[in-house]
Length: 294
Image (cartoon, rainbow, N blue to C red; front, side):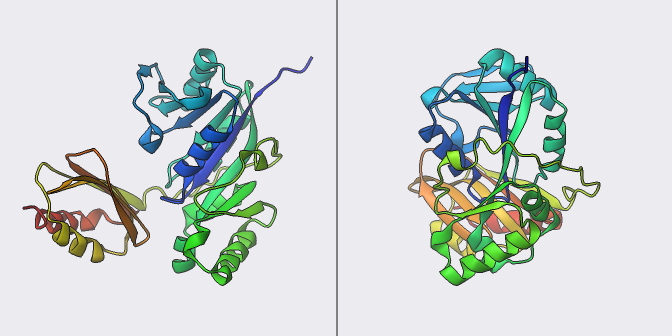
């Protein structure tokens, strides 16, 4: 008698592409008990009690979903999720700078789970403006069964077609769907039961991607900060965190030169900057932000 295995979907994609928004879509639309495994709760987290385990922290979400933050060994975390949560499906969200091939290879060696599909979310606006796909982005696309070309509202039809052609050149076998705000029915990539066999890339690019954090207890001038944002070095691909102005705290998001500020509770100021080889820029960036303090 064949033993039923829990299907696992891997969601990958570069920084700020819309993976978290896609996770929200899945949670809102599914009636199944789904466990989501991610490196940190991030924006998916809600004000519920956190239960700490040996290798994961767990938060109960809406609709019977469970959000699990990885705090220990990957294999043990999967086993702990199955034992404690008994999910009908597991979704793994990789970090934006991670290459999913290692996760895929690890999953194929586990008896209790079966890889269902690998979903790659692509930021169409970022790729249209910065068409040179780095090593990490290429590996993410190569390993995908389903590619979601996201943020279609930010580019015209010609650019969308160029992005589609670019990803299909890398992975001609993938199903490609164009969407806005990650608005896609999860049934499109649930049940694919991929036969793709990932091979582990010997050359990973994580050493090139660097990050640093700016923290401050001071209030910042809005005009001064806007000036700072307009001059952020192009090597900084992603920035995210809270910035405190005289009228309160704002959530700051920057992706590939495009940014937004949304007022919401938070603070003190804490912003993480991520990009390729930006370690040497930390002093310059922090000094510029200090100059914004009032």
